[in-house]
Image (tube, rainbow, N blue to C red):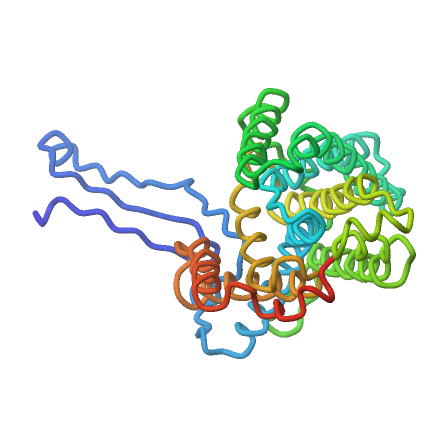
Length: 361
C-alpha cells in the first residue's frame, strides 16, 4: 500500500467507529488536510464482552449467552407450537404460519404506540400490555381461522402437494398484504418501554428479557394445561389420533381444526410482539426466517409433539446464540438450517418423535 494512502478503523468500548482517512490525491496532500470520519454508530443488541477486554471463556460471558439463548429459544418455541399443533391434527405444514407472527408484531406496535401516546403505559402498564397482547392474539386467531377456511379446508381430501402449494401461496399473499397496508419500512416500537435491567457482576438481565421469559412460561404452561387437562384438549388429541372415531363420539373435527389454527396463530402473535419489543421494530417480511427456524425447532423436537416443539425451540435458540457468540454472528441464521438438515437426515422423527402417536396434539 502506498504510504500516503491509508485507512484505519478503531472500535472503542462504546461501539463508535472512528476512522482517519488520508488519500494520496495531490490536492489533498497540498492542502495537508486530515479528514476524520465519524458519526457511524453500531447498533449492536448483544453483549460483546471481547471489546471490553473480557475473554469469551469467562463464565460471566457464558451465563449471559445462556440467558440470551433461553429468551430467544422461548420465542422460537411459541412459534414452533403452531407448526406442530397443526401438523398433529391435519398432517399439514402451515407455511403461512410465519405471517401470523409478523401480523401479531404489527398489531402490537399499533396498540402499544397508541397507549404510549395517550400516556397510559406509564400509568397502567400491565393493563396496556395485557390489552395489546390480547388484541394481537385475538386478531391473528381469527385471521388463522379465515385462512384455514379459505386455503386449507377445501383441499383436505386432495393430495398433500395441493395443500402445500396453497400454504405457500397464502404465505406470499399475507406477506404482501402486510407490505401494502403497513409499508416496506420498519415500524419502530416505543423506545421508552422497559428500559434498564438487573446487573449481576458482568451479567445483565434486562427487564424486557424478564418480561419475555415470564410471558413465555405462562403461555406454555397454559397451553399444556389446555391440551392435557381439559375436555377441549382431549377432543384435540382424539381428533389428531382418529378423526373418524372422534366424529362418532360427537367431536366436530371442523371446530377442532379451526381451534387448533387459532391457538397456534395466537401464540405466534405473542411471539411477534416479543420480538418487536426485543429488537425495537417490526417489518412486513419478518416472519420468513424466524418461521423457518421455528419449523426447524418443531422438526428437531418431533413434528406433532408439543413437548418436543418446546424443547426444540430452546435448543435452536441456544445453538443460535452460542454459535453467534463463540463462532461468528454472521452465520447465526445458518446454525438452525444445519440442525434442520441434520435431523432430517439422521433422525427424521425428531428427538421426541418415538412417542408421536401417543402425545401429538
